[in-house]
Length: 213
Image (cartoon, rainbow, N blue to C red; front, side, top):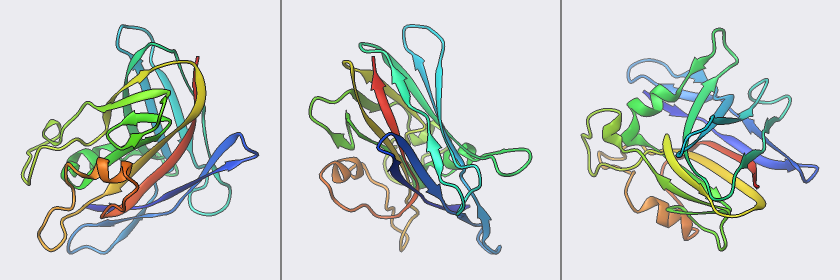
């Protein structure tokens, strides 16, 4: 099943981060395309040394058009390592539909990138507020059938370095095979960090305000 959708981010009043979402197209092979919406992106930060998890969300209350979505401010503690898990949901249907399972089932066609005031595979920010490292592989979610066993980004390690304010941007790209050749590769995070263009299409692009205390 192929999913293709986009969220576009921006600032409101210099403080509130907003985004808009558009419908995702699911391609079931011989079936007609059906429209799907990712209206919620949920980031859960669990301290590695124990403690309660903190959850921060992007939500778009009415999907494509109408009101813009908004992002909650991510607040972390300096000197703390976290496991960050990512969850995608269509909350505009009843009951809400968790779309994370589709990303996992199509792990070889998807990759999440973490950018902003971040030092990691896809971002080389100087004096970064946080460090990012992938903590999952395609084989965590099924058979690694094509190419290398690459990161997906549903599970990550985030280390908060020092107090400050900035932003954390999360991008999900859809990278299906093209002409029977994989578009997803180990080089993609570095290409993005260098400012290059990536193959595939954007499924989600959301921006959160980031505060490290």
